[in-house]
Image (cartoon, rainbow, N blue to C red):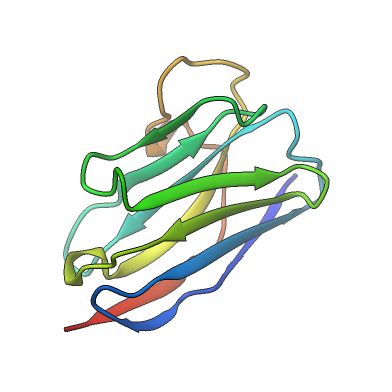
Length: 126
């Protein structure tokens, strides 16, 4: 069993930055791919970014490419999402998730993720 706790959300002005963290307990994350998803009110949950267990490969949604960076520190059992140049459309609840499949060669879908955090809300004001 893995427990995930996101933090770092909050309110920021458009153009600003936030850094989300996802801390895991219960099991080491070192062998798992990790992903961030988000869900805005009235919309479906969507993929944001993913990182392989080694950190060598990363994947991004087109809407965040060049602005967001996913990273991980396996020693701290933590995954991060650095979000820069935030836009109003980035406002959502952000969730981190574990993909326990060793290798996909592509980012996971939400159905393919095994464990989820409770989410952290990001609000972007214009």
